Image (cartoon, rainbow, N blue to C red; front, side, top):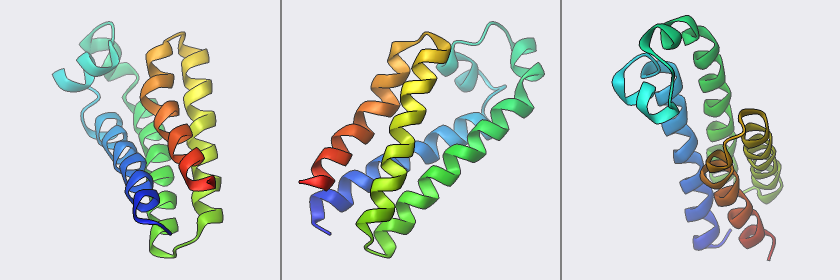
Length: 117
């Protein structure tokens, strides 16, 4: 694996660790409420379990990407980058928030392209 590939994969992985922390631990805190544009603190409390589950999945994506770096396995990296890309596309579509695609999908797509060339 080239240094730039490792760097970009790690960047996407750490981005998903950040998402995991936001969703699992900060969802009902001011930082989480502001970041996700939640309606209210009550709404955040009512959806805390769903957000934590979503955060766990982001943690799995990060773990897979970090595993691909440790194992120097491009096939695993490509698989998880495609998963992140699909999550970014679906997330933007389902929430009607294009910003989600730019924040989650675009870094994965750029990394995927760099990884493949």
